[in-house]
Length: 194
Image 1 (cartoon, rainbow, N blue to C red):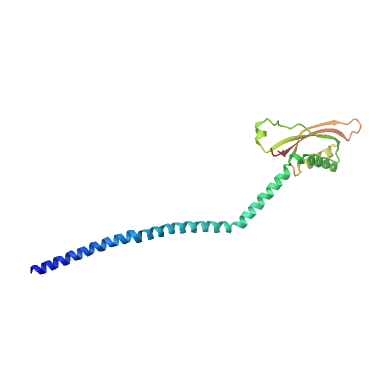
Image 2: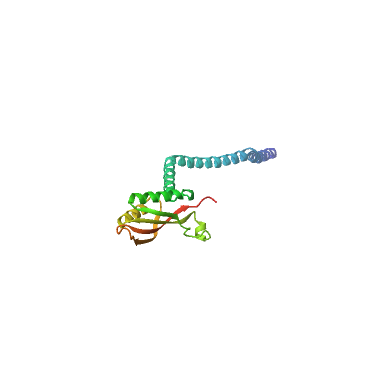
C-alpha cells in the first residue's frame, strides 16, 4: 500500500507539475507570440478606423464638389460686381469719362470736371485701415432743372457707387431755362497695392 500511495503522490505531483509547466508555457507563448500579434492587430485596427473616417470625409467632400463649385462661381461673380462698383485708382479717369457721357446723354453741358481733394486725409486711421477711399469730383455745368434731375438720377443709379454730396444752382443771365450748376459728387475707389 505504501507503494500505491507513492505512485499516486507521484502522479499528483507530476500532474501538478505538468499543469504548472503548461501554464508557464502558455504565459511564455502569450508574451512572446500572442501579445505582439494582438498589439499589432489593435494598432492596425486603429489605423484602419482612422483611414475609414478620412475616406468617408474625402467622399463627402467629393460629393459636395458641384455645390462648392457653384459657391465659388457665386463668390467670383460677387467679387466682379463689387470690383465694378469700386474702381481701382488707375481707373479713375474712366469714372470721369463715364460721368461726362452720362451728362451728355441727359442734356447737361459740362464746362469743368475735376477730381477734388480726397474727402478724408490719408492720415485718418479709419481711412488708412480700409481698402477703399472716398474721392470727390467737382463738376461745373449748364443745364435746366429737368436735365439736371436726369443726370443725377443716371449718376446715382449707375453701376458704380456715386452720390451727390453738394450742389449749387445759380440762374444764368444769358438763358432763363439754363442754369449754372456746381456739383460735388462722391465716389469710392479701391486703394492701390502699397
